[in-house]
Length: 268
Image 1 (tube, rainbow, N blue to C red):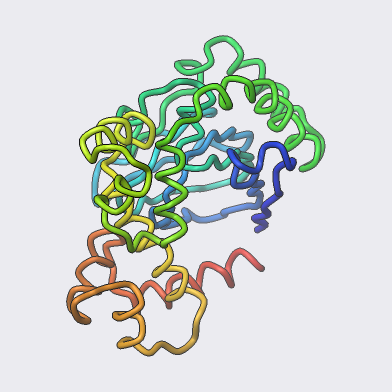
Image 2 (tube, rainbow, N blue to C red):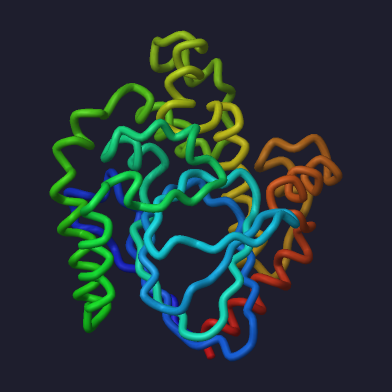
């Protein structure tokens, strides 16, 4: 099992978080849980078909090429057979900036790519499937994304600055403070945030706080819960656990164990 990330070209780094390749074999059904990360993605599957579900919902077949918006709580991928996929992980507002998509329509969903880029989706998927190496597949995606860069630059706005400000504060900043600093009204911020990000700025800030918290829980062997409570602005430990359960459907201790189990599995 192999999962590898690749950095974007410098000119794309304001818009693209990374590219990834995931390959391997799952002889038995493999259920992989992923918490929300605040990003968008465009993914191409050149392996066997797989399914996805959220919070006990019905399993749905995943399109062979899709665009996904922001997920507000964890999702599961159910894989079996040959795993082969490559994708672009976009910054929170970038899918909108590149393609003009109203992101509130893509929250917690995967949209078949042909609905977004029409006949180019099949052509791009075919090229990706025929690729002979990680580098070739990633380069194909990067060339396509670079061709859309003028559109992305043209759609930049104060909302992108708002996202950067929330990210800089790791989600621990009031919406009113964001609006004041950028000299816009909270009403305007909330309206345009829904269009570009898909959720309200307050909810996005909660997700970013959770993302940073979950990384700390995943990668540290020991925790000082009081330090974490203070660092992320929780009232007490029960408030922290409640927030974690809402976004990830498991408490922090269970997540730490499951994350380490997944890392060991991927490294086999």
